[in-house]
Image 1 (tube, rainbow, N blue to C red):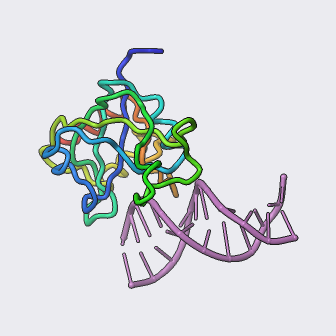
Image 2: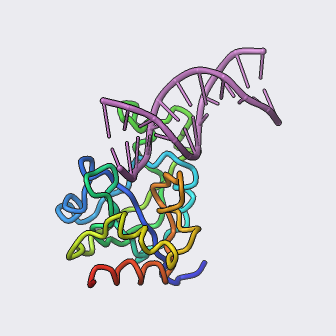
Image 3: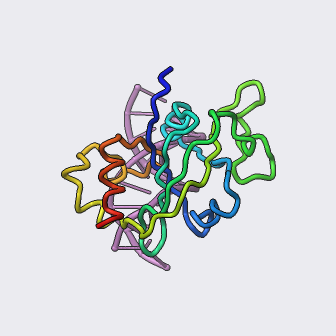
Length: 157
DNA sequence: GCCAACGTTGGC
DNA sequence: GCCAACGTTGGC
């Protein structure tokens, strides 16, 4: 397995869990992902990978902070908890279905990078960038080094 | 294996 | 709050 640092974008509804919440708790297990594609991306994550923290379902959706992957993937404990809204009756301790990683706060952006602004750079970011691909609702998605650099350069402009 | 029905995501 | 787009479920 490569040890080269990779980059990701992870979405969260700020009313549920925001970048300020992450700053407060410092490290948070990223529970509740119940989409196979998103789960498979988390399974590729390594400690130290960079994460763009995206606020969805909010007044100005966009990237508001930076985090990093703070654990290897491991089974999401909420899949075993009957009372959790993330409970999955088909998951067992022997054969878990859902994995997660811990996410650690790095910093807030000096200003949010709005989805509109990100879209304005779609040509440079590439058609295949899942964040702005039509109809894509992936909550965990890969970001290339070039995309990472471009997106963060917008913070300074 | 098809596909209609349903639930969810997430921008607007 | 609306609704388009998508993923999942379950009947057949």
